[in-house]
Image (cartoon, rainbow, N blue to C red; front, side, top):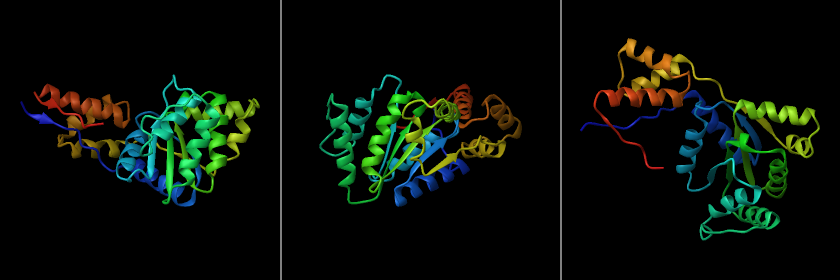
Length: 231
């Protein structure tokens, strides 16, 4: 059976995020990054982290994560700490901060899917930031809805939100892909017929994730076995 592996490309959003990550790393900045699902955030972060020799760490928040679990995950990214577990949020923040402060090279921690956060979680992010602001870049990333929630919480004077918000150095907004961006993805995956490309784009909901699903569906119908990259 013929095989197909989806080919990613370097998009304008990839370049924008790459520049933001580089700036956060070099200048130890705290950035908030917002862009909706399918705009390329998670792939870009993972790709940059994969190439970085662990100087870029990308973690995705799960809905069930508690603060202590988040920092256990942060600590577990360091050599010799892969099975680290603690039940103390104070200890895990201290340990994670100490490990980052001891690093000999510039680094950045990216916490993705931050729309899973509740307001109290953000106070623990603030504590970590305060302890690592001179050693480590920090990026908190999520969809536009998380941006809206932060502004609502700030306006409502929810406890701890203003202290979190005022610590940011900048906000980066990721744009919706346009048809040219999506067309270039089709071309990279050896789909050149204009009518087919337009049909795939129309069904993609104008995002990269949706387009990938449509392209893989297209190749499945042609009898290809879809090969997914290793995580």
